[in-house]
Image 1 (cartoon, helix red, strand yellow):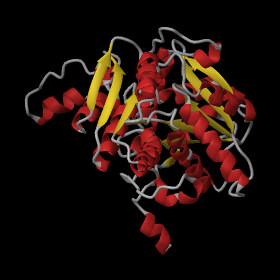
Image 2: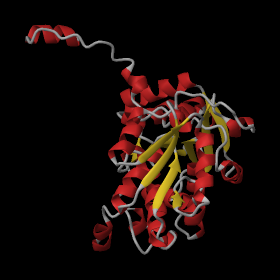
Image 3: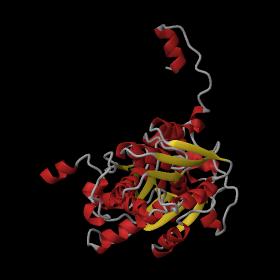
Image 4: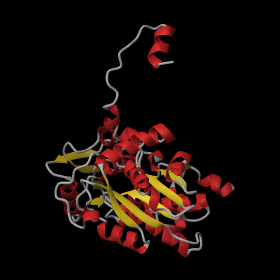
Length: 353
């Protein structure tokens, strides 16, 4: 108990050091330990005695799952004495890399597709004083450039092509097993660059190998219909979806993600933008969990797949980022808030009671 208290708030490296690459320096913002929320209304919609849990990764320090991998990638980079961090980003990686670079006291450069980044994420990178370069191209173009810059050795690339990122992200699977006392039967995730589903599968297998669980789940990934290269088994040259975090046409971890789904007897499927937005609103209004559109892909997928799960299955859905990261789809519903006189009767009428 005392040892657990000492590790509280010190992040995933301190908590799971035995399963991670060695780090002499730890750059942490207290990431990890995110809630695994039992969701009764989602469970009821699936039915047949299934229990659905939401792993809410939007409650990491910068509001997304990227922080788990970033703490390991940046700590290892500092150990190697690199001069700066660099990443390509659809938003969440830039926010996380900029924050951890600030914590470490080194510069961070972000290459991103112009006009394709949610404002909440871009503001985070700016706040942490990252050097931001917008290119006339998509995410895949940005990652190609970052790969080339990384060969010059001045920079540490902190995208998920960095194995330290994957190592850190697998800790979410450890936490799920620790909370449930075993692995779930199914695990559903959004898939963009595909590093996260790869990382979770690595974590589940590692915990099972060490006797921490008796099984591993079927890994099921969901891509947006307009950005579904793994589902269609072909590169998408111009991916389009409202879910900006998964608007990727040539995932860096494609092969590893495909292996994770095949080895786990899982699958990959697509969800439409309309289904994503409906799931985002439903989850916020029914379960009180507000996520960005990309995160809602796993929830949309769960609802589409509700009849495919075995009776009494335990199902985990990862939601990857907080709703305030990408609020435009919700903001469009606000309309104009016309003021009413500051009198109780007017307010009651406006509320509808």
